[in-house]
Image: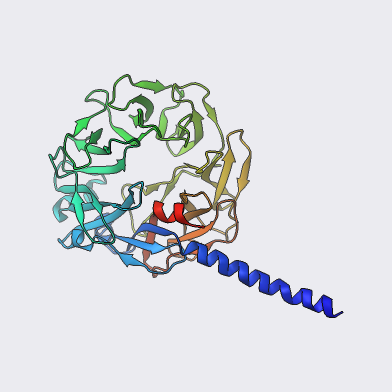
Length: 395
């Protein structure tokens, strides 16, 4: 009998130790993200200009604002957009829009980015506060987005520049010099631009068709899907596949294909989910933020979101089409923007399960979500990015 009671006592102690171990593990990771107001009157511009880039540990501690000086000018804001591969630099979008242009956009329910806008991409050292605005060097556009470190050893960067209202993929040197357009000609709106893991090729969608080209834009190949809408191609970790959504606009689903366009197949269905998450509580003429599938770090799974009854849940699918539901949320909940940690152990996602748009972390193969952010009602925390050096160094 004494042994029996002893075994009962060991169970809660073991569970407590497990919980403490998980908490300690999460404290080794950092996540960059954006906080902002969601319910201010005045439409999109009034709320977007409250956006500020933040960093927090994945256990919810040590929350701090970074690059605050970039948002000191009236009608300006910052957005967290990624990290350098070594985790040393945060990639920050620095935006400004005139109130007059914002009023025109609200009236006409459309963007007018040919005037009254400035958007640049900066590298910020979160430890020293040093800021490098790379897209203002040898400037090619007043609106630049999507900065990323090109894979490879030469240190070049990719970004997208809006020129005469048309988006073009560019590469540049690490110091912002030597900018060059790698799109296949001046026509067509190119977006969703990324580099292959070995740095030899690029992929993007142009007028919602997928293209693959050499790193400097030569020899473009169109991935023929037969569908009018194809969006944001993403390279698998081994470079052997491209992942993207394909179908009709607002009715598109995870697909993969080889970079040469072969072996195209649909992997899963989003069950009526449009793939767009509203990030404001007031009217947004643009409609929201795209919610796209992503690769697991080992390339064995694809994380995506899909409708389940009256909810949007986190799912994953293997390359042979086996699906799993990873979250089981309360009614009317939406889960969106899944992002796996650099070591593949965890996944962070956004959800409105608490009533506000917060960030949550859970084990990558499913489990109980843990709250990362605690923004108040009328605010949101979105678009998470794991800091690489913390993920790779974690136990």
